[in-house]
Length: 119
Image (cartoon, rainbow, N blue to C red; front, side, top):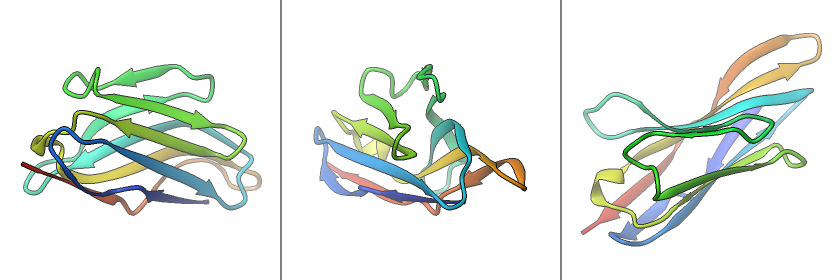
């Protein structure tokens, strides 16, 4: 299985971006999916997660400004980010718990997409 993020870019403070994370490959099922971010010089931090059933969790510092969603028919997850701040500048990566026939269950990661918020 592969995870590919897209939708990052450069945006002014107060602007919006929508990230996507698409799962491809020999996938039997995609369980929980998550967004993480890592700013320069900082540790990777949790942003949001969504289960296959739609249960959602947000990190406190993004709550109210981001919306996570997924389309199970497309094995794709989204992150709508509004009211972006310079502090949101980071590489955003997605992770998913994948079930592959003949392989089992494992966590897969994407390569990340850069989000830069200018003042």
